Image 1 (cartoon, rainbow, N blue to C red):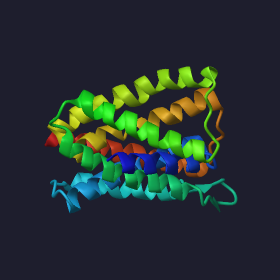
Image 2 (image 1 turned 30 degrees about the vertical axis):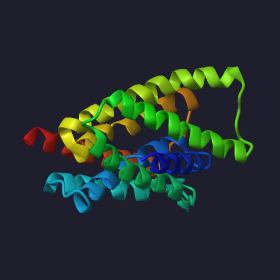
Image 3 (image 1 turned 180 degrees about the vertical axis):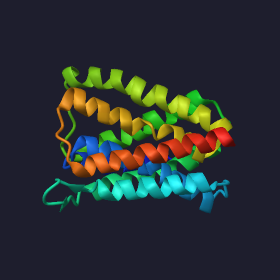
Length: 214
């Protein structure tokens, strides 16, 4: 679980450094597809037709979003690393699902401490680590909410909804990422982004519909 988490974080950071943050946020929705595929093939969770259609739409939208620029449709190679991080997290989500009956605080602590420590060691080896309090303290505050609290709620939800359903609701996260990219980063969005956004909205509607029906 910890190893997969470290691989996912490194892949995401590497891809994010070379791609548009808004596009990366929406590509991150592929994590739902990866989680569901692993849960079906390995853990035999039941998947409805609506969820299958939603997974297909998310995958298509993710492929569209790897092409940046409305005129040239230039293929961004580094988007592949964002997809790869989703695959790692899809596998990790299912591993975490097996532990969800345990104390969520302990699981969150294990994931946070050892995953963070692993990434810190790699950052030090690459001479990319920053130990200035100007960056460390705000990062810790952000991590408390966006990772610590988020993971605890995610694991708690897995206990009752399963990996696929929890991943479905969690797929709303990239949409908030897009909102923040508008507010704080002033990202310019091309035609591929809007096409992908429409497909993502449709797919998320199907996920909600499937959850309500079941």
